[in-house]
Amino acid sequence: AGPNYRAITPILEVPSEKELAALHEAGFRGVRFTFTRGRHGRPPDVAIMRATVERIAPLGWHTDFFFGDAQQLIAMSDFLCSLPVPFVIDAMGKIDVADGLGQPVFQTLLDLVRQHNGWVKLAGSDRLTIAGPPYHEALPFAQALIAAAPDRVIWGTDWPHPNNLWNPDDADLIDLIPLMAPDTTQQRKLLVDNPARLVGF
Image (cartoon, rainbow, N blue to C red; front, side, top):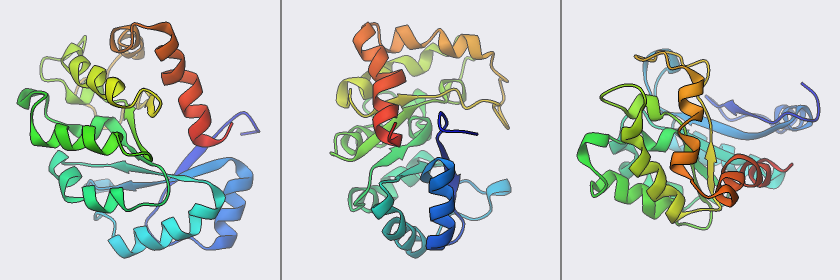
């Protein structure tokens, strides 16, 4: 795709150093571990994740974790804290908005993003909602995550929204940005400065 693109790759088994070198040359800067079943298969093995992290660390890559169940975040919190590379919790940890800001899962997420290498992606507001558009139920959670780690939050749309109940209009998701981060300096961190630092632009 050229030098103006960055990517991460899903991981099912430990990649070889040769594979990683080729991916790095092509612009890849991270690996993704998915904990949902179905089309993603079984959740990743801890030994495979540790061995993969050992191989990507010299390249300056990060890890991305997509949890299918927010409770998995609690179960994996010690593992995440032990990682020597940055870790990104995707889709705001798939927390249950009905349980409120004080729920143990969300408090664990806040603790994780306060770690020096803990990041969170403010994507999936549409997946967290109960009422549907305009997805405002996710706003208090996004705002709390920004407050906890203003320099380690990034934003995404999750386009093209696979297996999504709402099939959201991306314009609706973009409209959430100034509500999540009213301050223009924080908006630039969220959309430009933080992701650029994470992927090495």
